Image (cartoon, rainbow, N blue to C red; front, side):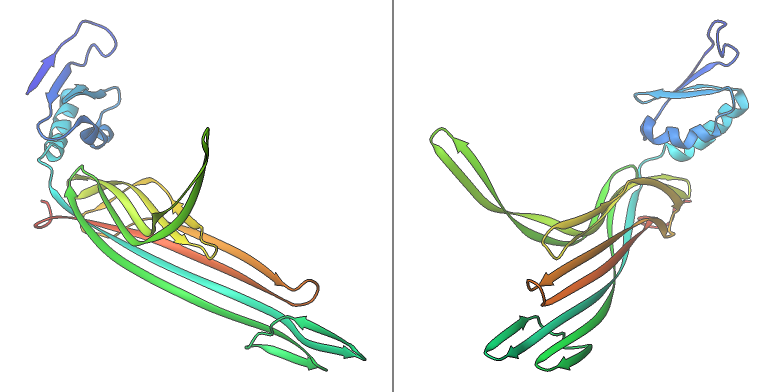
Length: 279
């Protein structure tokens, strides 16, 4: 349904107001695709299922052509998520252990000497230094189907049990409640796709989480909007985390260890129409 209304002289009085009723899509879905095409001095807004346009005849014709490509029945979309994660850890251990005797006095040094690395023996005492490193690379792909303009969540990971306890002070005494909750740990993303011709606009919130050595869960999250062509992998973001730990053993002399770790995660998305590419 289309209506053209000429208003009395005022701001933009030379431009008629055209009202277009949308058939398949919402105002929020079509406005981002039409606004870049609006001529300078024109106006474009919407309410409910109506578009309100003030512009010249040539630009109105251009907007109608673009709207015809956007205001279509929502297509079924297949969304693929690929996550690439790499990490590394460098660990250093220092230990001094053994016994020192002087007459009737024996001093025991409680440190543990690293099994690998350099060591030196001085009397009954051994001192050693060890260093080790490891690297990790992990990638995964998953997919889900949704409609154009809908939302989908993709997640790869596992559920980790976390124990908790709560203390309630009541008039009749103190009550302690203990239990276990489960937290999802892994990589995932919430995606809202909108297709315009052969291009797709994605509003997404990728997330990466992992369980640290002390039991806590580290979460990396971002939110962004990206665009790309249907059928092509789109880089949508990444995240990095670093951790530095130190541990000492013994009161004065014993041993110590340190570890430096780094992890990076990258997210890629590809969107295709189900049943073939759109013309």
